[in-house]
Amino acid sequence: MSGEVVSVAQAWRERAKAAEVTAGELEKLVSDLRSVLVRNDFGVDCIEGADLYHQLRNICIAGAEEIRVMGESARVLSARCGSAATSYEIADQ
Image (cartoon, rainbow, N blue to C red; front, side, top):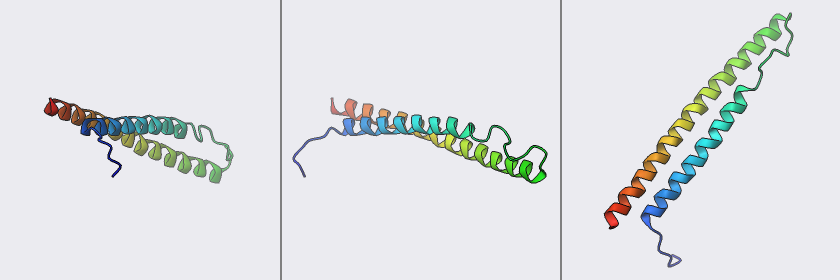
């Protein structure tokens, strides 16, 4: 050990901040993923191209939704970590 004393509450605040940053990054990723394949560049009159476009677009939409849910979970985690920090601060008084 380095001999440094770290507040338990401060450690939880740092965890809350990390979760909040993660949530923001995931939200940006969702936005970026939703902008992928907004139009069919595989051939409008090409049955295979249209099918490929729809399949890839569905994958992007499903992936964006999964990442959105992860972002929400990160926000909840951030709030819970903040609550834990507050609880430790109150207990230390």
